[in-house]
Image 1 (cartoon, helix red, strand yellow):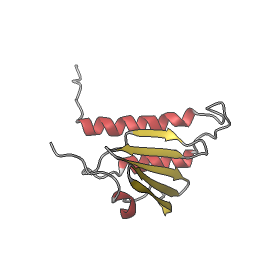
Image 2 (image 1 turned 60 degrees about the horizontal axis):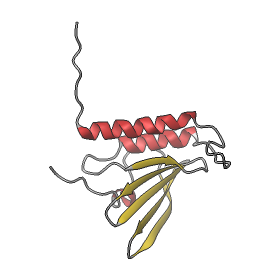
Image 3 (image 1 turned 45 degrees about the vertical axis):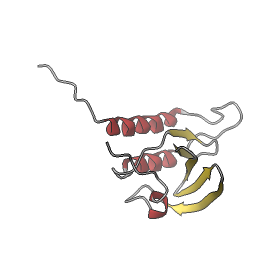
Image 4 (image 1 turned 30 degrees about the vertical axis):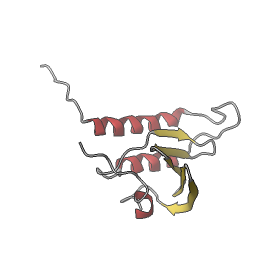
Length: 132
């Protein structure tokens, strides 16, 4: 019996690549960067994975996912003149928006444990997907 390969829509590939990148962080150890960085906490990795899975269909996925060196994970969206950074900590997300000719915006301590929908105060900053 031959099993045909099913091609996933690009959106699913993006999500799966991000989930794989988050999963890959589970193998990092403390001092992973040679400068004393802490490994991402297992709880934070799980919350970031749930967040990625819960991004609505009309929103874009982040361009980058990386450890923050303090046990957290950063998701970064890069737009033409703006960057959105979400820093995941246990049960909390800190949000920062940086842009050219724009005063930086910071919102610290948004409660999110990975369950349910993403809080509106975060969704409002995530860019909408371009329609094809």
